[in-house]
Image (cartoon, rainbow, N blue to C red; front, side):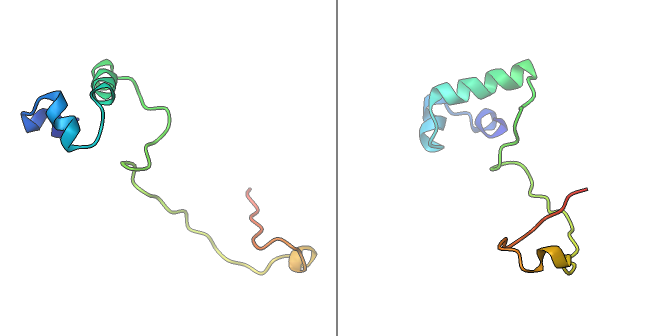
Length: 74
């Protein structure tokens, strides 16, 4: 939204250049104005985070398992 505001373009011109609809732009400007938090992160703008994992030998009970990957959480 900062890019739109800094562009000096009309809504229609900016949306044409950025492949979005005027309605989408208005929606996001409204959301920002209201300060409404986004409920789900946008994968296009959210940074990717990786969790470190340690690989260990599977327990004998799962050694012959048909699962390709078994993940135990906890």
